[in-house]
Image (tube, rainbow, N blue to C red; front, side, top):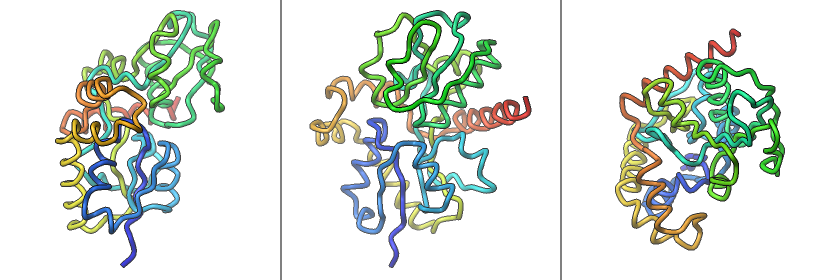
Length: 253
């Protein structure tokens, strides 16, 4: 029997998923690949995996897709790991360097700039080490675990999930579990149950993984229980639809 190929984001925010999957019976029947978000997206788009935790912005590029689980990487107001850093306030920003690791965060930045902040910066594609280019009137979008060392370093920082909430009064979904072809319902049911177990046992996941964390146990618990919101509920589905509609407006501009 061929293993189901699954790509998962290798950030701290997926710890409950990874921990639960690796200790489950299901793990023997899957090929779990840990990637940055942009690689998860690439693997799904080009059918190199069967199921992936992908940036929601990718959905606008797929001819068809299935959202396969009741879980996601989302946030209600602050997320703390997707930030715009700047030495000057928004209206003085002339350019923004965009993190190469996630399409959703890049696209969310562009949506906020155009429709909420009402600014027109030049966008610069990032290369590794770009975080040090945040100076003068050039701001930077940084995502994932690298933000943990940057928070509080610059004069201004804007939490993109919090800014989205101010704009829409909705949570934000950064990534969802997506396939391009429908996966066996029995396997998805089991997969969903494993994800739920991880979300319900975040403290255990942290305790058993503490040697590999980018944060202290206390900070990790706060981040994973008070910042990341894993349940793909109705409000998050509304937010995904709204975000995809804004992407269409961006493309039409």
